[in-house]
Amino acid sequence: MAEQLRHLLFVLNPVSGDIDKDKLETTLQQTCTEHGRTAAFWHTTGEDDLQKLTQHLARQRYDAVFAVGGDGTVKLVAEALLTTDSILGILPMGSGNGLSKDLHIPQDTDEALELIWDHEVQAIDTVRVNGQFSAHLADLGFNALVVKKFCEGDTRGPGAYVRIALAEYGEYEPLRYRIETDEEEVETEAFMLTIANANTFGSNVVINPNSRLDDGKFEICLVAPFPAEAAPGLLYRLYTQAFDTSDYTRRLSCRRATIRVPGHEKALVQVDGEPLELELPITIEISPQSLRVLTPRQG
Image (spheres, rainbow, N blue to C red):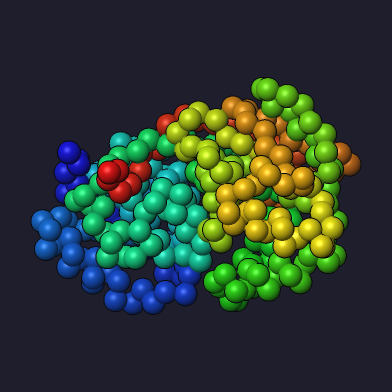
C-alpha cells in the first residue's frame, strides 16, 4: 500500500526546458486540493539554491518534495533531501529528464502527478564525484564538453544538443585516463568516460544497460576513440541497449574509483547535467540506497 503523502513541497525551476510554467503552480495547487493534499512552493533562483533549500527543509517538514524541472533541479532537490526523511518526487520538465526516465516516471505532467496517491517508494544509490553529489550520470570527455557548450547557449532541447555535438566532433581530441577501482586498474585513451549510477542519458542513449540504481555499485563506461565511419554503428548500439557489443566500448563495475588524466591537474566533468572544473585525481564513492524516490507501482 502506498504511503499517504499529505504535505507536499514543489520546487520549481522557472527556466528549465522549453515548457511554459506560468500556469503550472495554479494547476498543482488545484490538483492537490482536489485530492486532499496541501501544496507549498519553492522557486529556484540560481543563487545558493542548495543552501537555501536545505535550510528551508530543516525548518519545515514535508512528506514528499517534488523536483519540477530537469536533471539539474532533480540533483538539487535530491541532495537537499539527504539529511531529511522526506521522499523525492519528480515532475519531468527539462530538456533531458534522464533520472525520471530510468525510474519509469511518466513524462506527462498529469500522469506523473498521480504518483502522489499511487506509487511505490524505491531507495536508490547515490554517488559523490570529488564530493559533488550525483544521483544519475557524470562524465568526462566529449559529452562533458558538449554539455558545457549546451549550458552556455541560449537554446534548449535535443536539437540544440545534437547541433553542438556535430560541431565539436571533428576538432575533439580524446584524452588518456588512468583508472583505479576496488576491482582493477586500467589505463586507456577514451573519447568519453561515463560514471554511471543509472542506465540512460536524457537523449535516450543507453550507456549502461542492465544495471540497477540500487545494487550498491556504479559503472565506469568507456567509449574508445573511433573512426567516423564507425559512428553510425556505435550510435545504433547506444540506442538499442547494445553498448557491450561494440569493439569501442568497455564497462568497469565498482564501489569506488580514482581517475587520473596524465599531464593534467583539472578536468571538465558534467555531473547530472552540470559542467564543473574538478581537481584531479577524481575520486568516486557510492552511498548505497541513500535516497528514497517515488516511482510507479510495479505490476
